[in-house]
Length: 213
Image (cartoon, rainbow, N blue to C red; front, side):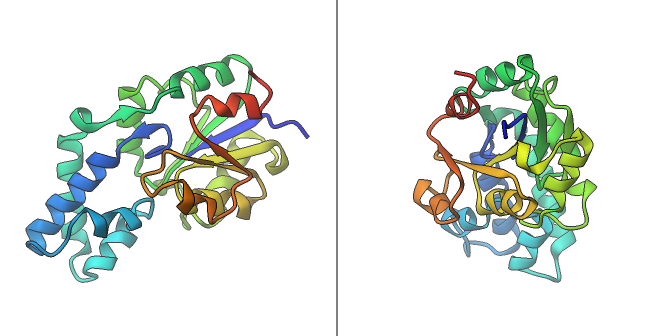
């Protein structure tokens, strides 16, 4: 059955927020736990919901940790966020050719909107499912299933594209095809461990997979 629906993770997939995320974590952790953590501690946790990640460091200070993280993240957002090569071209082509397009992310809606607007992607997506919209985040099937329902799409006609195991597993749990992105900060080999149906070396590879190039 031909795929007519493409769901995308945002951070690390469509836009490069890696350095922003790492810098925000390091700023926060250095304030609360001076000189205890470095970027090697942060990278394996990226892709998780923010609350869950902060609980990893201190369950008793989650609110304060999140507030500090968000303040830094928002104040440095535009200077540290860029889009990945081939993203605009791919999204424009899919949009023009009538694909149903959605974002499925563990971010809050406000920062999602900031990132999409900065990258010039805010006019292409038919639905956006954020952490605010679900009870169970990725890797649970709920976020992908919600996006499919909002798009009136069937799982067998959809593909979930992302840079972390949470994206691949959420797509698999919802019954969609899945694609990993080789530019994930954790490295291609990490993502291949979760057996996505496809691996994209660059975003335009998706066009060939869908028969659009």
